[in-house]
Length: 147
Image (tube, rainbow, N blue to C red; front, side):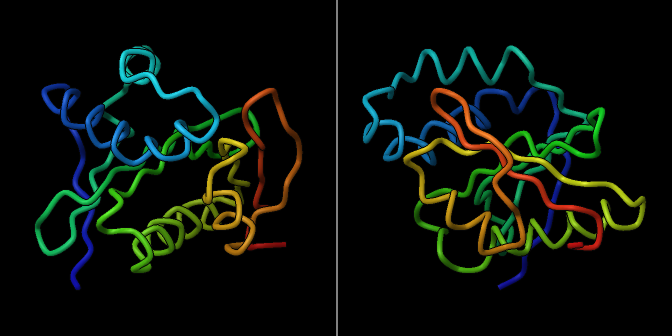
């Protein structure tokens, strides 16, 4: 399995929204908050193609991620892998790339996860520590070099 990243463009917005909706559907339905319109609106309100990368698996778009500079390091603002590609180590591969970038510059990485999502276990298993929670999300941080 060959995993690559490709920078998104503004023309990719609809494809990115579709991936986000499909990847989050189950978790959002579980908490009664699934709304394709809201998912689209929330994503597009902060969409920046310069920090958005597609995840390609053997040349096929399997998901995407967004890493933004933040006041306390890097913010992993989005990481979505389509359900048919999940549980293959793709998300871990993405995190390794993000961690490499962060560690090179001595930066922490923060991320939020919907409380009822399986991504909470994924982030903890991959070196993040819970640092807070909101009404719908848990927030995690990984210190530089996994300290």
